[in-house]
Structure formats: C-alpha cells, structure tokens
Image 1: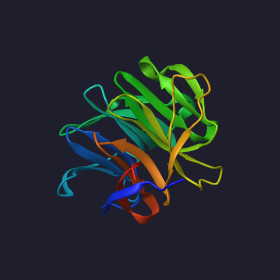
Image 2: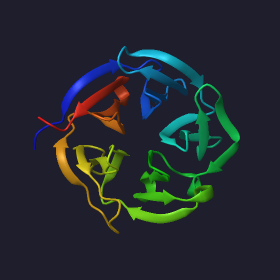
Image 3: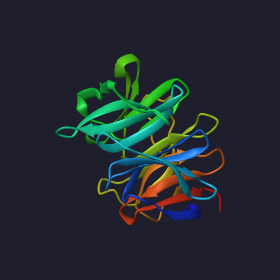
Length: 215
C-alpha cells in the first residue's frame, strides 16, 4: 500500500498538538503542553487568535455555528463545551460526555460524533449529548472526520497505536470496518479536512501535517 502524500509540515506553537478543526477559514489547533486553542491562517501559518482552554483539549469540531470542544476537567472528566471565536468558552453550558469519557470529535451537518477509545466505539450524539447510536470500532481510531461530501474517514491503528492507515469508514453501516486507502508513516493524531486536503497532528513532534491520499 502506498503512503499518504505529505503536502505541508509546520511547527505547532504550544507543543503537542492534538485536536484540529477548520472553521471560518482558519485551522483551529488544541495544544496539550499549554492547554490553549490557536487559530492559524493556513496560507501564511501565522496565529490569528489564541485563547486558554479551561482544561486539556482532546477533540474539536465545527458545530452549530461555533466549535464544539472536548475538554478534560477535574480528575480527567470529559465535557463538551461550546467555543465561539472572538467570544470564548461557554462553561455554563458544558455537557458531560457519556460516562465522562471521550476524545476525538467530528460533525457532519447537524450531527455530532464522539470517539471513545477505551470503549472501542464512536457515539452519534443527540440533544444534551444523549446517545443516539453506538458504532463499534474494530480498530483503534487516531482521529476521524468528514470530507466536503459528508463521507467519513479515519486514521486506523492497531492495539499498540502502530501501523496507521488512512481509511474510509462508513458510519451508516451497523458495524463498519475501515477500508484502507494509504499508510500513514508517522504517529498521526486527529483529522480535519480543508476542502481539498487533510490535516493531522504529529503530536509528539509538535508539528501539523497536511496530506493527500493521492500519489
């Protein structure tokens, strides 16, 4: 299997980037070393907005005109908080993740999906983060997201989070399996689509990478 074709690689201020999302023409990145969100102009790779998160950011997705962010609070309890660029976090409106656990987050239109690594599943969420559907994961998921046509893709990994593959993942099936497209030759986390290419975090190297599955 061919590798993904790397297009750009940039340093990520703040260190150890994890969640990524495109919103308003900006790439939003959450960093684990300083627990901040930053918005980058992807063309110039300059930071245009920066804000401290109320805890460690694990997942982020554009949703309902703003950004939904998975934040770890207290003893690592996970909550989904609304973040509006230019305004900040709505902590009063935070809603606990089911069983207080969750990481990667993705949205397809008006539907929000939450990855739960420990339970090997993705949850389709409804109002108040209620569980609409549990989608079993046959592999580890290092990130997932949707393209412009609403198709879901993920970075699949083995139990040791090695042998990463960029794959299609049909969430409409009752028990979907990743359909590999290309190998990912670095330790990627998170997945976001800019309309043309995919972006991911090379977390432990503190870098952001854009790539294509086309040779």
